[in-house]
Image 1 (cartoon, rainbow, N blue to C red):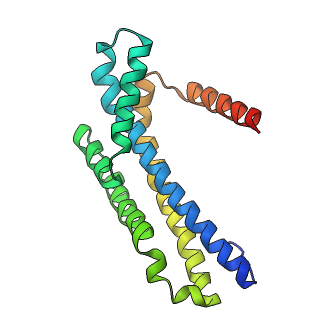
Image 2 (tube, rainbow, N blue to C red):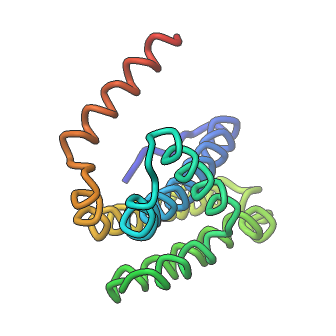
Length: 175
């Protein structure tokens, strides 16, 4: 169990921070679904139709842009329409969708009274940690299901690690 601050100001900041982490993780899940659609749908069905790298980059960018316009629910349905989704993942994605929508549309309104007391804020703190964990679990499970398609597409763990190191190096350079 994580430490909960004693002061009112620190509790409030911690609730907002934990909420931000949970919503961030929901967005990571959305992005993971778009990436999954690239691996499972776009690459196997469109890569052979493109002649140049520039054309391929345009196709990928257009595909991803169109998917990023979709809601989380539509992304989940899109995935189900192009591949068999294991039952455990389907259930976790459905739960993640409900949780994301609850966080985005109802959480603070329904927790207004709880937010006024230290006990209520402590409950919120624990709920938001659990929400983050639940969304992370769905993201991790999706990644595990998509991994074989990514490898087939040429995106091996080694290539992913190299790309991540390059991204970190660029980020450090920008500081």
